Image (tube, rainbow, N blue to C red; front, side, top):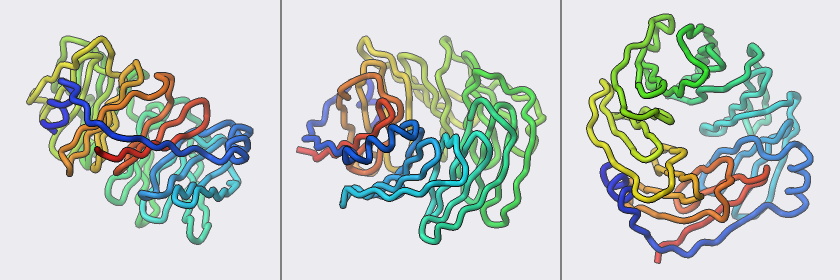
Length: 298
């Protein structure tokens, strides 16, 4: 982590030649008619799962071919994948789909306005819809519902196997996962408002417009890294294989931990919706469509 932040602070540029891949035109038109891409996830290095309002799409990048599956539910909003399974949150429930067998199951959920957390941790799915915490056991199929009465609408939230972490105004708060009724305790205070929180194996990451902060799990500040330049940091995505830092002017910094390599590029527009990175490529959505960019180091 130290390497990425040092590179982030100084904006060292790794030069790469980029090749972009877009959807075939006839599929792009069909996707737009179904409300555009709501969310997507990397299924593997060569395949992307995407959802529109009522359809799951599988894009094989090598063949540049798409397969689609119309689902019996609509208002699809977010998607995750693990192994051969796709997990989709709609405004009405949780859809589980095995792409190989096309077996679909559906669990009705309470009506919600904001999805604050959607993550797969080991053999469980964790969801926070408004102030409702939902835990689904993927092996047994059991599902539990618990209220989080202290959750504020503007809170950012993350979790590990036993703790909730909240970024609220200029504070990081924590609360036991086993007792969602327990009021959270402040473990860190910043001079400026925080824009998110991420739990990794050993640390917490949070950020302001112009600073990335690394904490231990008890809230002790380990490192504060200023972001140089006029742009503001607006989003982070933390994955095992990559960390990406997106700025308000379209600058995207990608750190690849196993290569200890940082790549910086400028997207053609700052008005992007979702950016997700995998090894050797990243994808982003704009105006309901998706583009994949491949980077080859020089």
